[in-house]
Length: 258
Image (cartoon, rainbow, N blue to C red; front, side, top):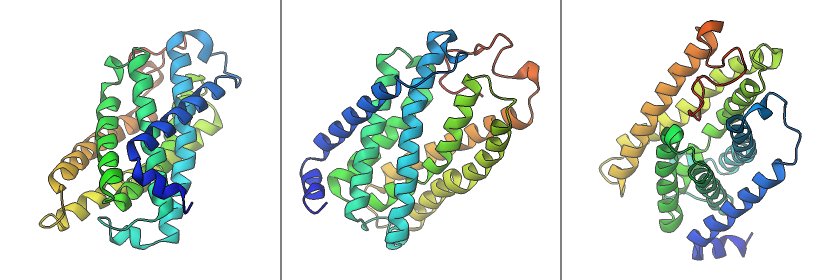
């Protein structure tokens, strides 16, 4: 670690590229795992399943990693601007590589039009994370932003269960409640904390206009997604379900089904 992190800091863009290729390798390895029959019905479902499989690996890894960083170094929570550790810098390199890989996967497989919201989100995250890596400021802020990956675990599991037509399973029922709790605590909580921090320190933080704009846009997106989530899992009936009776997505070009 003593030699790895300085090397990453010397070549942050190259480091992100390497981690992006690693996640692409993970993508190919996961294709060898068994796939539910319902997913194999069409190409769109197969792509979503494979994409989400890589996403859930990233979420499991980075959620535990980001929380561990803060437990080991609590100052990351209070000094969002300058605080960092070798493990936190490595985490942001790895996570940026994932987002680059995921954006490329969406674009190169021809799903950009139906996934424009996620591409916009990825573009803002990648630009903020790259700024942090190249300038070595806001590393702590990026770590806190990755708290959202705790919720991403349950969110990705929810979508994978829907793709497998398992909405009536007990796992889906339990997961939808856990998903709401983690959404509020870790996704909205982390986003709003960072937004509040920037507002409180607006007068002296560098590049604060750019970061605050990105955070506000992501805040709005998260609130819109939260409303969709609640409507889909708690206020919709079978006829209004986003999954048709024949097991296909009614709006198949959307990356995220309500």
